[in-house]
Structure formats: C-alpha cells, structure tokens
Image (cartoon, rainbow, N blue to C red; front, side, top):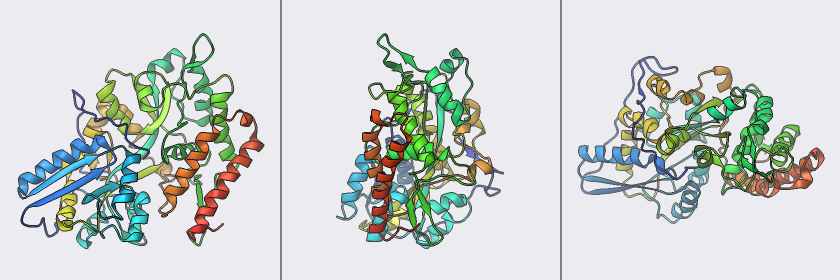
Length: 450
C-alpha cells in the first residue's frame, strides 16, 4: 500500500457494514473465532500499538476499549503517523528496542527485522489460526517468510481505477476497461486554461512523492501490459529462487513513455503543477486516478456528494496485506498476541471496511450491504479467478524497500525529461540504468540470478 491520505474517515452516515457470510467463497460454513491462547498477563499491563494508517486509528481504539472492558488490567494506547514517517521510525525503533509492543506493516517491509531478530515469532496457537482457512492462500503467503508465519493478517489492499461519472458522461465516455481506452480517454477528459496549461487532469499519475509509492504505481501500470497468466513484475524470479530486474523491456518503455508524454507532449493529460491523488479527485481536479480502497472511506468523509465509480484495472492488480507483529523487545508479548487474536474476531473485522475503507483480510465476510450502498467496492472485491491469477504482491526480500525506493527516486527525476518524448531508445537506455542498479542491490544480498 502506498500510504494513508492522512485523514480519518468518519462519515456522518456510516455505510452498512460487512456481515458474517455463511457461504463466502473460500471461507468456512460459519465464521471462526481466533484460537484461544494463554490470554493476557495478570497485573497492570500498558500495551502500545503503532500504525502507518491514521484511518485505522478508530478501529483499533474501538477494539482497545472493548478489550479493556474484558480485561480491566490492560490499557492499550494506539498511535499512528503517515506511512513514510512510520517506516523511518520503525527502522530506528526496532533495532534500538524502543518500538511499540505491536507494529503494523507488510511483511515485505518487515523482512529485514525478521532477519535481525527484532520481531517475535508468532506463537504456534496463533499460526494455526492464520493457516486455518479464514485467510486465503494468497494472503497466507504474504505473511510467510522462510517457511514460517511472521505476522497476522489485518487488512488487504487492491488497486482500482477511480473515475468521475459526471466528467465521463459530459465527454460521452464509458468507464475504460482496457489500456487503449484509458490512454484514449485521458486527453479527452483533460481541461486547459487560457494559456493552454492543464487545469484538470484527465488521468492523475503518481509523479512525485516520498518512499516507494512512485515505483509501486509504475509497477501497477506495467502489470497492465502482461496477462494474468504471465503477469509483469519489477523483478523476475528464476527456478533457483533468485531475482533480476524485469522492467527494462518494451512494456517498461510503454509505461515510461506514458508518463513522459503525458506531462510533456501536447495534448497533455497531467501536470506536476496541479493537484493529484485523492485530494485532487475529491476536489474534481482530476477525472481518473489509480488508488486503493481506502479512497472510498476518504470520499465518504470529505466529499460525500461526489458522483464517482471505480473499475478494476484491465489485467490484474497489486494485492498486498498489512499484518500485525510484536517487537521482540516487548515486555508484554503474551498480552500483545492475545490482543491481536482479539482483533481477528468478527466484531473488529467487520468495522474495518466501514470505518477505514480498507478490506478486512478475512474471507468469511459478506459485503452485499456494503456493495448495495457503494458499488465502487466491486472493483476491490473481485472474485474472478482468472483476474486473481495475476495478483502480485511485494517481494519478500530484505532489500526490496531499498530497490523500490531508489527506483522511485529515479522515476521522479525522469518524468519531466523532455528529451525522452517519443524516444523509445532513450527510454530503454534510462530503464536499463535503473535495472543495473536494481541488479547490483540484489547481488549485494546474494539474491541475483537470471
């Protein structure tokens, strides 16, 4: 996930909640409670939980109050910050044993800390719950590293294309379902001021930003030039489990040219000088953009009258999992794991979508009421097995965050480069430079192989 919008959705009219499903695809016939462990410790326990998603704060605080009512000796303090700042804090706090007791992030980010021994192993009784069938196999793989469960799934993210219904209608367009349609529609949906500058983007691209999000969005567009049976990733894995950069190719050139031409070659459909992302969409400064499901919650809070929809990306999507881990330095590991178990129970899981806009990781929930009120959820809750066959997630490599962050830095500097307009040779050379760096990082970690 590329990060929180920094707001806490609290709609004045909450959407109807997800409910337990008695026949959910891939789920059990009845919702399962998490296996019981030893319970919390006795005596006064002050537990801390930190997150990079402020919109999840109300979910966790509500659960903390409910847990405290059951166990008055336990007080749980919840804190959050923006995702990039949170990552920086974890990088310092976990090795120096100053972390909160419970941390929330993807295992792809946390693998270095597993290797360092700064995260506690998930207890066997809780591992059994993770592998019991309430999470699908894909989600289970997101929290498994070196053949061991290293995290308890909390919520998942899939990325879809959001569109402004009024803008598409005014342009005589239908929601795009192919890359050709997206590229054809983007300039038709763009508005310009008297000087010819873009005043409303037809397709808002991730042109800047901190951390790995820029590279993640590049990767998502790259996926659309593959197929679910042969998805395109930033890395390719060989039969020996080694990796190499796989974006310096014709498909990578198409994506890079989409960005470079979109902001440099008339008719432009985006501009670094105008608003972007969720805020721009809510302010109707863009007609389309690509983002995760938490946008639905943000719109409900900040632009409840916005007439919008969402469609799945043409080929497949990035499907990632945020999970809970416990710091090895925590003096209250037993209570921490018990509270995580409590967060897996249905009352807490059902509040995730309605409060935060994220999709609970459990698969035994029924979203029919949620879909009836906001059909945009349908783009996130895709059940097509062919589409799911192409799902990708972050690579469980200790160096993955370094690879993605460095690629993002290069891309931000490259997108404004006018010398690459309609210059596939130059674009390929630039991507090969980035790929060489990616491969050198993999080699430094003994993970390179073609």
